[in-house]
Length: 92
Image (tube, rainbow, N blue to C red; front, side, top):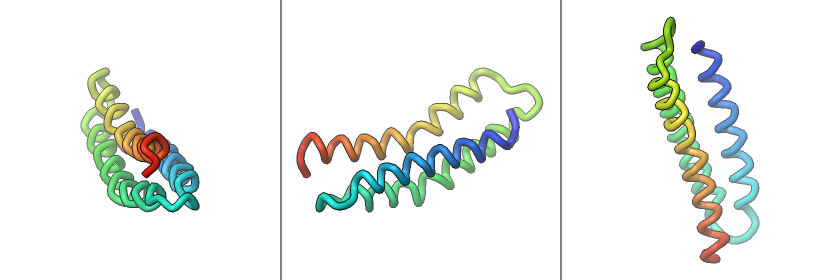
């Protein structure tokens, strides 16, 4: 694994956050604000987690670290999309 993975994950998460913010605006709910607040703390936290994982196993990545990176990187988009779905389903 290289440090390019961290930048790629950051860009993908930022894009998903942007799409969630744009999808949640204009209907009177606070989905856009919630997505922005999750991204405000989630993007740097995920980048730090991924940096530490890549730094620990830079030469020989183990499967367990790849799984941890995938799980850690998918938490923010899952929470943001769950917020968007909850607002749509429960009409909040």
